[in-house]
Image (cartoon, rainbow, N blue to C red; front, top):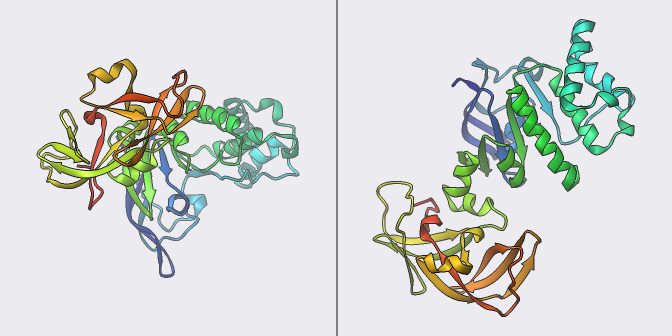
Length: 359
């Protein structure tokens, strides 16, 4: 596979503040990649560097094999969709879609063809004669996406395009974006702080912190094999349960509870002994009839119960730590109830306490 976008040893400094640090990222042609992280992690900054809206301090940006590090945004062959719709209020939808093409002096029939194609893909044909003020938030965002689509470029950049919408509209447009990518097969780079968007949309996710990429992988890899404690804690809602202890000769021990890590998928063949942290996702704690098959079993008391419809979240105490357990929504558990749980160490994640890297 060929690369669509290549970022090599990229640095960006604002005065003495390092925002991006020696960042490297290769994005395949036709890939949907998501830059995910909390506020001020550098994800939007990286997108703006790719777009040419920010001048890098060091490193290089390649698009379709061409070095565009110092090229103007208009010369990079990209289409960008921002968090704000940024539509011209005095123009119709059709006018908004065609404005950039008219400025580029494209032939009228080519403009009409591109506008019609974008309107068809985004299902906004009935809206072409309306002005933005007569549109809903979701319709305006479709128009904003359409304005990027008509440019007929190879790479689309999305900077948190759904964050201004309500929950239902975000879910609906998320599905439409996924269909759009399947239809167009263009390279798409998408910035978000929403892990649900990242997990559902991405071919690969780059989780960022402090201007660096903490892990790059498929949603399955990120979820099942987090490379460090930060990624393990960031992905998952509710987040992973953690316990500190000691790892020695294939056994993790905490507060007198020994957990043989039989079947665990180690990050490398050589694993050293010493202080460690084990992480267990709430949905991986076994309850009910399945407990009898779990290697580690214990009795716990429900401290707090959160019914959530399809799921029930139960808070218990294990080794003096609050543990969250995701149970079936119909689970009949109330505060003060005692019940058995099972832990399968092979499904857990084990980390070095000092480096916080996966063992």
